[in-house]
Image (cartoon, rainbow, N blue to C red; front, side, top):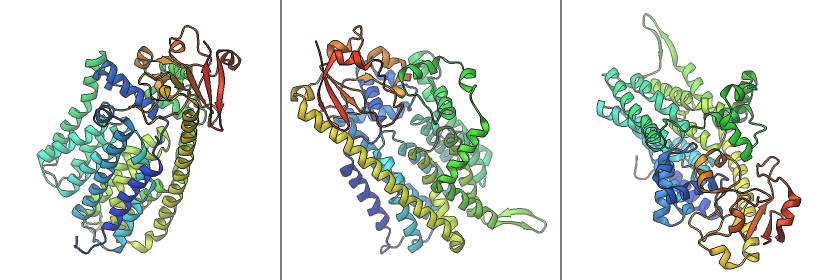
Amino acid sequence: MKKNSKIWLPWAALIVGLALYNIAFPLPASNDFPGMALHSMLVKQEGWKYLVNNNTGFAHLGLLSLLTEVCGNMLIAQRIATGVFCILGFWLILKISFETLNLPLDRVTVIGLLLLASSYFFMELALMPHLDIIPICMVLYGIWRLLKGISAGGALAAGIMAGAAYWFRFHFIGYAFFFPVLVWALSENRRWTKSLLALGGMAAAYWVPHALTYAAFGVFSITNQKAVLYELINRDRIDWSCDVQQRLLQLPYSEILKDFQLADTLRRFFADLGYLPEISMPLLILLTFFFLNIKKQPGKGWSVGNATDKKVLLTGAYCAASILPFLYLRGDPPRLMAALVLPVFPLVLYAVRQQLRIYAAMILLLAFAFCWRFATNFSIHRNNTLRLAAIRQLAEATLPKEALRAEQSTIAATGEFYLPYRKYAIAYPAITCCWPCRYEPFFQHFQRLEIPIPESNPIKNRLEYVIFTHPQEPGAGFPIQDMDAWLRQAEKIAENEYASIYRIIR
């Protein structure tokens, strides 16, 4: 790269963007944050065996818990981890682009990288507590090493890295399982040796979380497979209440699958692809690139372009095969979409440069989709931040300072409520709804918050205040069993558009 290049433009867009996201959205950006906080508290109180869980990977929770201990604040720990790995991920994308694909550093390349650096994907990856950017970096590392040319030892190391992506999020298992196949396909010599070594590294890494699960709980898997199937079948009518989520784990697969309609799920999946050009356009570009380059040589059969063209197409097929099944299963959360877009972006940039005029309309549509989705997500996060800030302001204006800052919280919340004074940012650690309801250790070490609070529940004697957050959508999942009985237990002392605060009546 030339010293007078403009590569600083996408770097500046990324780093300034990361800084601005943290300034503009200082509160947690995902309703999964309270569950992550509960889990980190469980690990802190009861031991490291509870890193084994049924939602995120053990490495995800382990890193988040460790950084929280170092920083003293889980939100800061999460933002540090995601920010550092967003920068590392972009660096790996540049390495793939310039070192392995030999893209020229001209205006077209810089504009493409600027489009990616300023995309909403990095906003989501930087703000979300899920740390998906870390396994994405592991996938990018494996692709970089393969495209660069890999030794037998390098294949083993890359296989371990691809397998370790599964330690963070279960939906990276596709990248792990197909990686040895990609090693075989891209290797120019000793391909069986390299692919078998990559398979051994991947398999060893894959079995680590299962071995830990067996050591901790005597079983090889604590899974959320039933939950994934339930969400696939009931995506438009999911009930997040604890009763339903707990009952789900007791149901046989046959009961869950009785309402499964393959045609309906496929229709929804392909409709989603059509609705999401940031997913469909990169895949369409690579597919078009394949048809533009496939040729039949007299006496030699079919071939696809030069050696680099083949590597680009094979790697793109690997990424699609690895992540599209999970987009089918789970829908389109941006962090899952990023698991496809970031690894294939250098490949798409390479293809676009070969036939820029052919791809111009697709690129314009992709740029429009990025801008539209960025504006949409920015608006969603802004409105959520304003809502959460208003709830906190109401609490700070109403409740005693000692209650807000007490190490042992006497304040519970039925939904998202965050305080900056606490290590884990949440109110009283209680289970309310959503995925924490699926994890039995939570019920063993915390209590379930219900409205009204049963007399037998130990929570009732520990709480002084309950912040009742107004549901943002129907079926939000918090159990309101008897509002009249609740009003006999508590008195309302403050209210705004987003929340009502009650004092428990003794």
